[in-house]
Structures are given as structure tokens and as C-alpha cells.
Image (cartoon, rainbow, N blue to C red; front, side, top):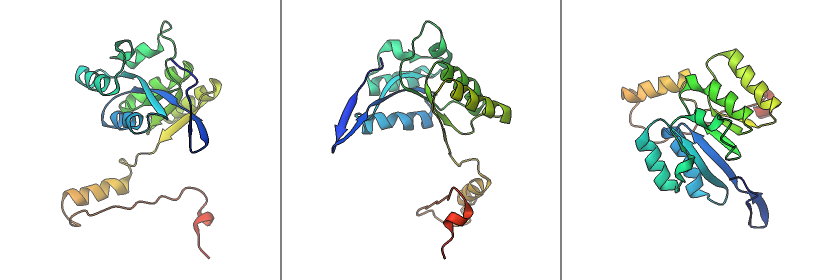
Length: 183
């Protein structure tokens, strides 16, 4: 399935990335949309989700071959299933991140993992090590829904305490504090 799909836009050459989505809830489906909006950059190859209706919906939208539709992500790690794509986008429930990330990294998939990486610190460290050992990239999506301040804002909005929401601008500087100070 994987090939050297090289494209060129405005003189910039790039290779189309192929991916599988493991866990096709709202977040997984949002990632899949990238393939529709930027088909020259990303191609969805396979999906894994336990819900038949979700699998059928995505198969139809993305014209996926039946042999690349799985009801359990573990099927993708079977020894008789070759690596199908460049990367795996893991959007499973939090408690399943650890096992999926470990097994898919061992299979050679680059990993895009929803946060939290895992539910135990030692599992997070093991995910990092397994990715290193298998020479695969690991990227963690930093969704802020569990952050206490975000939960409080949501609570205040739900209770209509701070009024009607018009817009939100959120900036989260990352790095050394002194890099963000203005003299």
C-alpha cells in the first residue's frame, strides 16, 4: 500500500503521507477530514473502530477497500497483516492509548497519539522508548479539555454565568519564560 507518492506545489516537493485511524469517534473523524481537504498531502488507507455504522460511514466517504476496514485495532498488529501506511493516528479512549501505541510502533507506524499518552507515567516512558527503539516518530496531540482552567470556563459557560460566548482566543506560550518577556 505504501508508495513514493511525491507531489509538487508551488515548486515545493513533498510526499503524500498515508495513514490509518485507530478509533473513529469525533476526534478520529476530524483527523480523517484532512484527507478530504488535502488529498495531495494525506491519504487515509485503513480504519479500525468497533462500531459498524461508523466504519460504514467512513468507508463510504473515503472510498476505503473492505480489506482495510477493521473492527479491532489489534487486527492491524497481527503478524499476517503487513504495515499498511506511514502513520497511525490513535484516537481511542484514554485507557487504550498505551497498548495501541506500543503495538503499532513495534509494527513500524509513526504515531500521532491523542493526549493523555497513557494513564500511568511509566507507560508514557515506555511508549517513548518503544518509539525510539523502532525508529518511529511520536507526536502527542495536546487537547486541553482536561485542563482545570478549561473545565472551569466550560462550567461557567454552561451555567450562563459569564454570558453568551462570542469567540475565544487562546495562546499558550511554550518554552522558557524569559523568551516571552517584552523589554
